[in-house]
Length: 162
Image 1 (cartoon, one colour):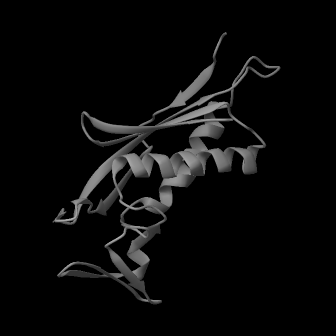
Image 2 (image 1 turned 120 degrees about the vertical axis):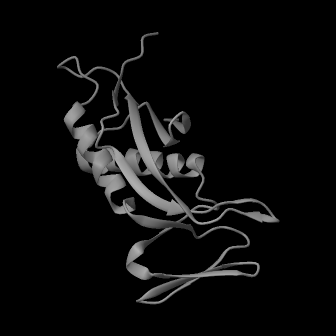
């Protein structure tokens, strides 16, 4: 069986964001930031033009997905012990005795249990699959999102159609 795919990993597929993760029930990292680099691979059969997908369209969709994350604080809404309350102007976050208050406009609340590189790659992967179908009418066979947190340290998420 032959497989075809396209990959985009350009210098502008980068976003800077702050986060913290809990490593176990007793440890919570300090708030810190990364310059995340994103690479995406899409697999599908060749179309009539002998292409999988237009590189430019994939690049544009990926940029559109990461743009809202840029220069934001990434917060997990499904963490079992991180409490988040929000108003129109602020987001209050607490974990055990620690408490942070951020301007609402500087936060992105994400439906995940921890803002790890793995979870962020998974979230982006699902967003990309949805965006490909909704905006381009394109249903991939497989998608891989790789998220580099720092040079040499990356996580990836693979999605395959059923």
